[in-house]
Image (cartoon, rainbow, N blue to C red; front, side):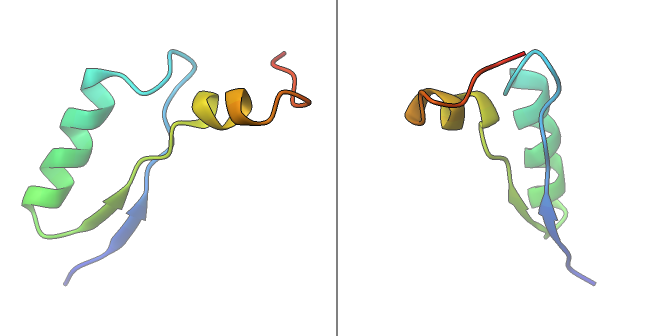
Amino acid sequence: MMAEVLLFHHVLGKTKGIEAFADQLRDAGHIVHVPDLYLMAARFPHWRRA
């Protein structure tokens, strides 16, 4: 059974480890989305990081 996964990164951002884990899930046949949440903040400057 295939799943569609939304994978959120940790405080360090979208690292090679997060991408490797997403690739493992993809290799198993899943659809994986890994948004870069810090990139989103850069696109909307009125959002402020804590």
